Image (cartoon, rainbow, N blue to C red; front, side, top):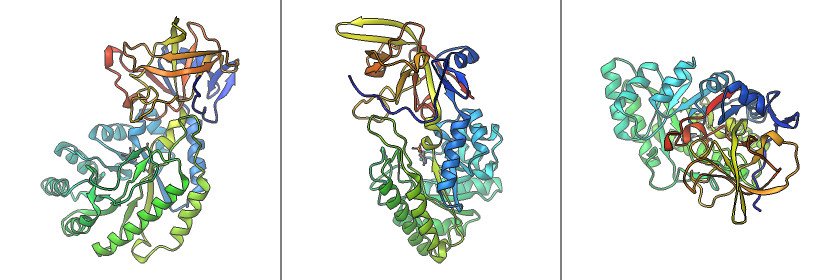
Length: 408
Ligand SMILES: *Cc1c(COP(=O)(O)O)cnc(C)c1O
């Protein structure tokens, strides 16, 4: 038997089934007309944002990293909750504009922006987080040709990273951002050119559950911003301090405590140096805002024994749930939180392997999980499915196609 990850708070039982927004798993599947299905909970998103707002200083803006979940109803909902949006392609720009988001609230980071993407962003009035000197030069040239002053910030590749974060994105050579020591020269060029200077973006990592590490990194980010601003010789209009707040996916993971992070930021904001006194600060979060608010429902289509193992074979799989299958940036596969959604209140009775319908041994949703006795036709829930599920999985693999998605 292998343990399962912790089921996020806020999920209820109704008529013995898992319920989201007052509707049972079967009702949700009926409403959507199919499995597999991603269900996102508006109430969950609201609660998460309310907790963040309560813990963080008023002065701190909260941005949503669209790549975590670009489903349009989710974006529209987030538009009423967050201060800004971070996008990473012209595809995400188009989705954000279609969702009615004001481009003045949007910033665009990403190491390989094509000329067409720069044009689209400049004409929309989105802030570009420049990832290199070459990209900055192209941006200025395109802005000149279009007769529009581009809004430009610089993404910094800092010499430190967020300790214990799932994905290391700072420290040493990186395709992301401009090495810190080269930032002042580039910033001076941007300010001297006909661009609107928007400050710095310092992203140091993702999926951190270590509160001390988050606090230490935010302190380092502010120190680096102060130093760079001094060297640039101009105050920073904006500082995107990155994010990195993680969520518990695996057995033993614990949710981060927001209060000490907010308190530490309060203290930092109380003693800001002159060149940061007027700065707009924000953090950018993806999975922390939406990850636990989503659940993936898939139906058991076969139950079979092989040697000493029982398999629950579902109509879903890694083509929608690459991360839960253990194939998206993990070294050792561990179980996500998984449950039998149609028997949510039943006691565990058997040890089963829950797998997807793809013809590959990689397609695993839960290994040796202790679950209630399930039958063909029952629904399986994979939690923590609100971020990097639908769009970070190879939906076209084996001709399967995308899952349905609903926001309730
Ligand atoms: C992916 C990404 C994020 C969001 O990361 P989460 O772990 O989902 O919070 C934020 N900022 C940048 C620059 C990113 O690349």
